Image (cartoon, rainbow, N blue to C red; front, side, top):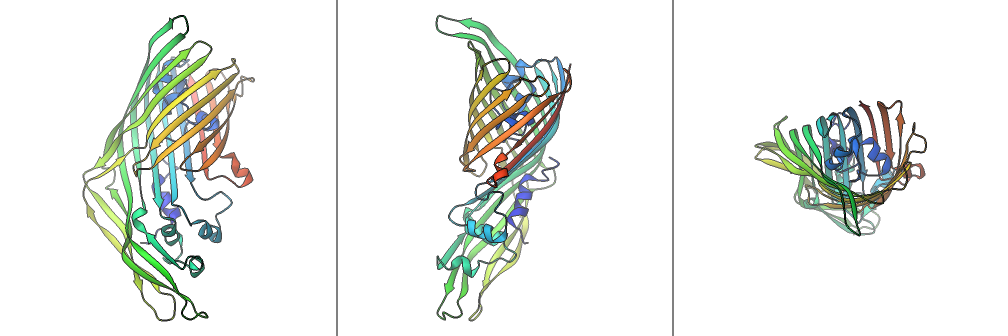
Length: 419
């Protein structure tokens, strides 16, 4: 089985165009740069269920589609074969993707939603990535000239993904309002929670063993690559069709104070998926020794039955503040920490804004920095308020792609009917 990294990324997002989690996948949130914990109304579904207590409509029906893909190494101008090989040195390569689509029905402080969601991350040793992305499983002589020898550690490769149907129920309420003392004034404190039931499939990526590639330059006119391997393998372990199930919870608090400030905290995706059995599908690499010419790496198929498989959803903890400077200008700031199934932790710092000078077309702008992506991302979006009852929202990032310096792409669109 030959898998390139691009194919592995396709697996991690599991049919992304058909099927959310920590990335900003709501159209309004994408336009402002992040799922801010202080968002209110229907847009708060993905970031803080407490915000659902501040909805304007009794009834609302929202349809939403969003996707996100990113990596930590390549910018959008660096996808030629030579540039990929030159960049795959010195640090692990991380590829991640998310996609979501669905419909949410809101009634007062309740929300019932049916969504499809997919999410995944793969991290691999940079030298292993060169083997996985190549047309043939080998390390080029040119890549070895400066180092002399490379040891590829497939044990550093790993990740997980899930594709599920998600049925959820949310509830939010005001805990108290109009509390004050001599120094502080709290206009309202709100609590919200969401329960998710998930059914679908789990994919886990793993590797083991090593490949060592060394330049044999005993004959300076005819240098070649020699390989040695030690149980080198890369494989994917997945549940049977639709057999993975799980439950997850979201919790949030939001407090609005005097001076038009809002403070909020939320914990999202607290839960995991599991299945009683799984299937292994992968590749083992072995060296074939030649004389006075490059050795070759041969592939053999790995397959078989395996036992229980689990996948922890990316847990997201958010802390944020919002300042409403006027009816037309709102600024957001958030810190969020995302903990992935593979043990990676991402720290995200985000600033966002919304300008409603023109009621018909609210404009949004935001920026964020991710410690895993190692990059600043610029976002923009807009709403189209066709009437008081029908609205369309669009968001996109990273706008740095215009200058060929983006490491990811997010896009979202939603429609909202409220009455």
